[in-house]
Image 1 (cartoon, one colour):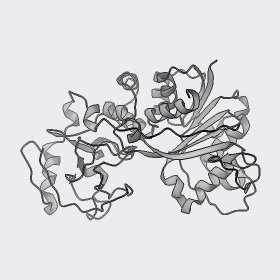
Image 2 (cartoon, rainbow, N blue to C red):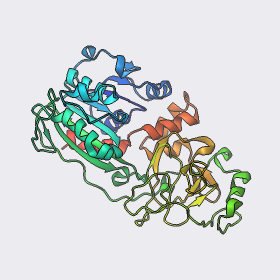
Image 3 (spheres, rainbow, N blue to C red):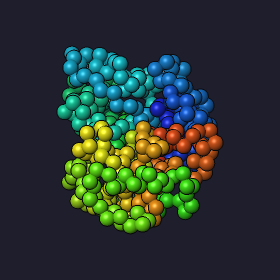
Length: 383
């Protein structure tokens, strides 16, 4: 029997790709994404029964009952204040509201929601509490425990959540995301266990890269500006720098973070998808305009390839993108970014027929890592 599957904020179809990899029989009932370029790539890779352009205008009653619903919804902040008189009262106006409305109407057997780690701590955790209350109140449970029904008309699902990192599931990318899994009927569930990582970024690099991805002499000359301390070999292999930013011991931090004590680099996400960070040799091309030249910004930094990639991001591409320290400094290619998200070379080749490099970078940064979805699906369907 085939699983009936639907996805919102579908991007390039990470859940669908994971199901294919596991050979789990399924019917792709629908997909949905407002981005026309993501839609173009998705339709090259998958064959949905229906593609919706906007979750906010879809008639949910016309969608057949799903076995599996997946949504990597954007995190739009909403207030925790209010009378807590039902999820429409507190989440209306956010895209999570549309996700919750679909779940309430369709009643899928299982759902998986994904978002950035920061959702858990947003507004001192109150935003996330509202989300989990909406999903689990009304007869459900949260991480196996029945709680207080603080929201009227909750969805009543049995909900489990955990922050998972792509680097713990075979991908050399430090990408932490919150995953929320819900079941309409009670069942025990545990998230997949972490696995040792036996890859580094260099394992996903292409052997031959077009000259356009390499930094120009003009950009490399930027190393010598603004009094940066450095040593510099003729082929840019040996570079040190007086670091401006802050050091994070726990892996947290934004654009300013530079090193971690464990030697791993940070996540590659939608605004930061073309670099690898190492323990010591992080170079700033030019001081950040965004911070008045005080703190390095992701777009100007150079990373080593013998580690784990920072999180891919969707809104940083072209000349503003991250650089890696191969024998000549260059940017990661779209193919390398797609590989870092668990997609095959064939997948990228199909998508590049209909999208520019800038869109391919964005799509990689916006995607859920396929390998993480694979391990979650194993726990749900292949126990």
